[in-house]
Amino acid sequence: MKEKFVTNRNVKLWEKLSEKFTIEIKVISVKEYMIFIKNNHAIIYYNPINICEASFTHELLHLNLDYHDFYLCSAIKRNMASDPLFLTMFNTSMTEHLCNFIEHKMMFSDYKKLGYVADLFVMDYFEKKINQKDVDSLIKNYKINNKINVRVAHLFVGKLGSLFGDVNTKNDYNELYSIFKNLDSDLYSAVANLFVESLKHDYEKADYIYNYRDIAANFHKRLINWKNNNQFT
Image 1 (spheres, one colour):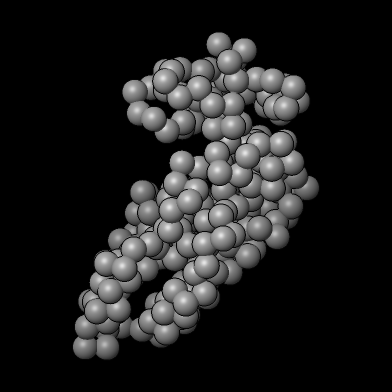
Image 2 (tube, one colour):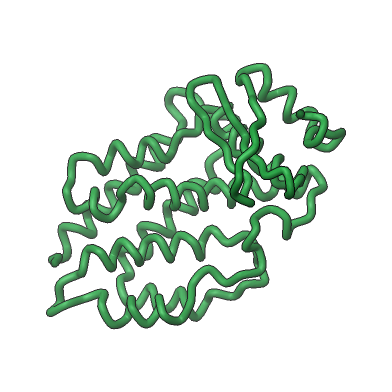
């Protein structure tokens, strides 16, 4: 099966990952490629009507972060688990969504170095990652009687993360960033710095002292400060 997806462009990456992981390739009915990783076993799912080496390599690059023990998503989940407010804002789907965008930004330069076309990196490459309806909802509902609506703050983080995580640099979000900043500059900064620290992190040189846990801890500290300075509903 791998002959459909492994070529001279990605064979070194495949061989490197195969030293640590058993990699299965399985059919799935949905169009998108996806990967499931547990311990040292990985399954990459593909749709047979959409054979795409670039999409397959995208999933290998996700696995490459696991190869280097970059487990930011798990660390954020652990840090949020003891606080009901953060559990509402950062449930499993939200945290995975946010970290997926962070990983995309981390992976994209390696993807391009392998010679793949940028617009095959994600299926929605050309699409804007937020619509006017979402923007209007955020502006209208973010605060109620000067109290932050927790469920709308959840939307705030998710949508902001999708903007920061957009690898298509032709999508201009500067005006939208200003709207987010005006709504909540502290929460904006917390999410922005999460991306900045992650992208500066050299995961290939990480060790017991220098690793993803610091990024997650810093994000949690910023959120605690944000929480202590606000009221919620």
